[in-house]
Amino acid sequence: MPTSIQYSIDKADRIRFINEGWLQFACQNAGGHLNRAYVIGKSLWDFIEGENLSETYGLIFKAVRTTHQAALFKFRCDSSACRRYFQLTVSPLQEDELMLSTHLIRQISRDTVLLLDPDVQRGEQVLSTCSWCIKACLPNDEWVELEEAVNRLDLLGGGVVPRLQHGLCLDCQVKIETELKNLK
Image (cartoon, rainbow, N blue to C red):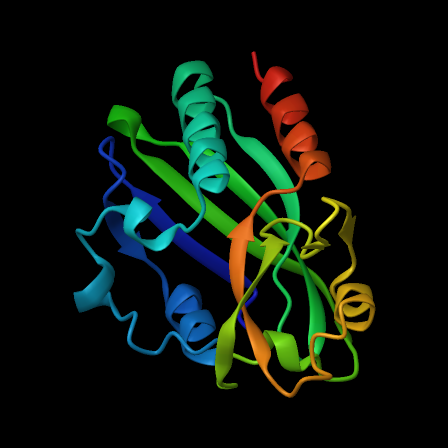
């Protein structure tokens, strides 16, 4: 696991740079095809799923570019075998470019969560998960830990693993907006 994952974007949000940690993390998480030749020059928005997630990143970028201050966020990016806690720093560079630096804070092993295995075959059912805290959204709009959602929805009882759709839960959205308000 790389300790530092970095990439920069230009003022039009095109990816300009990715470090070795970024490439290593991509390879370890079923993104081996995301090499420099494929990624550099492409819009970051080509790689972000979910409307509210795109809007939130847009707000973060606008706030950092406007205030010329770095913004710091904590988030999770779990694998099937561990919980991973990260810190993201979005820093201003010259000419409205931004540097995004992600650092692993801690990693906790756990029993494998088949739902997060990128190699498992998926069915038609879709489960929304928060891209910041990894909670899953139940049909009643309650956000719960992923393992709890698997049990409560009996997601694996039918033998078909649902597709994951990335989004942002209200709690994380409020935390992000609060952090952005503190930038001045």
